[in-house]
Image (cartoon, rainbow, N blue to C red; front, side, top):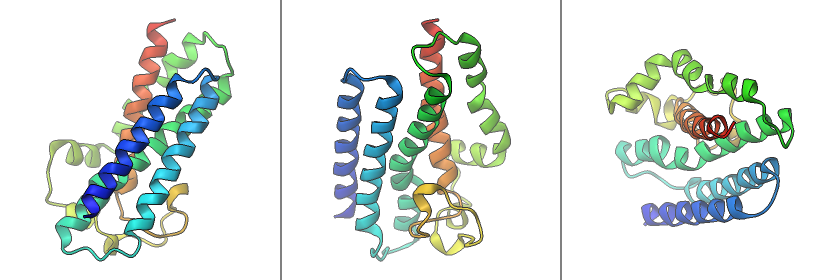
Length: 179
């Protein structure tokens, strides 16, 4: 039941984001709208799962490793994008800025090398530690979408950040191609 619900909400979010990209607005405003849509969708999903009792570790791992980042990755992306666009202003042919930004993903991957290798390899040996709520450190600084302290594992934010950085890298590559 819950799998169908999150997939429906994810499909709706992606459709909303696609429509938003087609609207004639400044890029920074589109990024802000994208962030709002992704945040709203994540809140809907979190509302469904907040009281959900996972039937087993596999179900909980799927939530924190796949489902949550499918939404929070977009929050990360639009946060990065909005900040960058606000920083440089529009319109801008700032090749040097975008060239510097093209290294963000590489820096992230180097900073979190062990986890990125683990995650991208498909390995599952640490999933129980990384993607279950019981292993979350309550003293860790949460991401803004986790500020309430609910629905958090120790590493789901890294998956979301990786996804967001990858999407942003794609955006930057497009900007560089048109400069």
